[in-house]
Amino acid sequence: MDITGPMPAPRLDGEFLATLDRQLAGADAHLAARYPGDPGTRQPVHTVYVPADRADVSAWGAQALALMDTVVPVALPVALPVAAEVYARVRRKLADQPVEDLRIDFEDGYGARPDAEEDTAAVTTGGALAGLIGAAGGPSFGGIRFKSLGAATRRRGLRTLDLVVGSLLAAGPLPDGFVVTLPKVTSVDQVGAMAGVCSRLEAVHGLDPGQLRFEVQVETAQAIVGADGTATVAPMVHAAGGRCAGLHYGTYDYSAGLGIAAAHQSMEHPAADHAKAVMQVAAAGTGVRLSDGSTNVLPAGPPEQVAAALALHARLVRRSLERGFYQGWDLHPGHLISRYLATYGFYREGLPVAVERLRNYLGRMRGGVLDEPATAQALASFLIRGLHCGALDDAETGFDRATLDALAGRRTP
Image 1 (cartoon, one colour):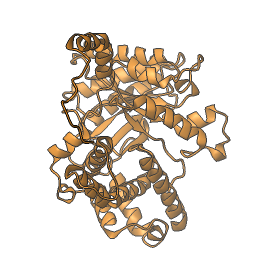
Image 2: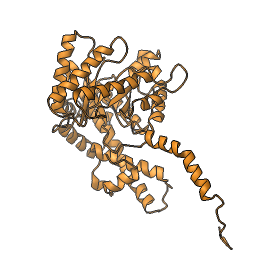
Image 3: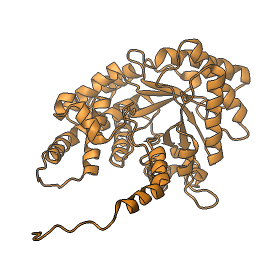
Image 4: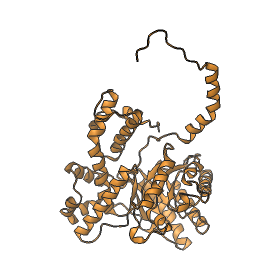
């Protein structure tokens, strides 16, 4: 547009704009407090769930490698073809840090036990987690899933949590990666109560306020839609008072609660996709991470059956990644193979295009795609996630981490 003559002056004066600032100050503060954005920290690609009486995962990496080498060396590449570079990286990952996040289960995977037995297991678990989280080759994150805050299990679950925290602290400071999972949440009130439990545990165990965080497991219909028709999971995120670290989808409890036949319960059922879409919108911008659920098809039996189970799991992992769920549950050492093959393949396949588009964006160059700042943010986040899990190396991106963090809009931890 060619403007000739004097430039027109704006008509909205400073006094009016200042009044508007005051009018919207509360909304601005509310937005900043409740939607702070990504925390800038690493998110694990999975959570491994193991019952409290079978909590030793020290051999999982070796078992996964043995499965790759002896059980499915021929069948797996046919069922799940990926580049040789991906296989090599996955082998290194299984040798160096096979489990990124460990959750020792005192809920469904453990069941009801005599109090004395669960008390002993809780104390043992606290000491074990102290030695595992952050140790060389051990998980960077770890914790427990305790029994729900439903009336029937509330006191037993909280007793276990209290004992685990106490025995963990007896061995040293609370690890940075410690997190607990709150299952079968049915109301916003339960999330608010859990925030209060954390505050009380911090007080009685001498922890700093805000140190304890928890994940909300979304596995009931009431966690998605309340009796009044509201999307309950959104207020749950905010009722946690900043303590909610993640929303984890529970595949089988949620499906069963909706009356879906067992043969059709799956991470990719339309009902599952609906629940996860609601979770995704509720968590967007809050800094709360999302995790998909698990498959109950285990890689066991003849080699072809094992390879088919791994191919199924890999396809489901890839499906979750494409839908913005960068974490999921793994229940068997063999699932580590398909988890990392699918995850590493996802990032390595997307690397060239992501780098090119980000370079074009920074250079203001017009390529085949005209990207906006929001897309540049997504591209940078994609590369950062690939770096965090070991799928990518810094040199491959062509950008330094400070540039990627700035583009991704990540907060300084």
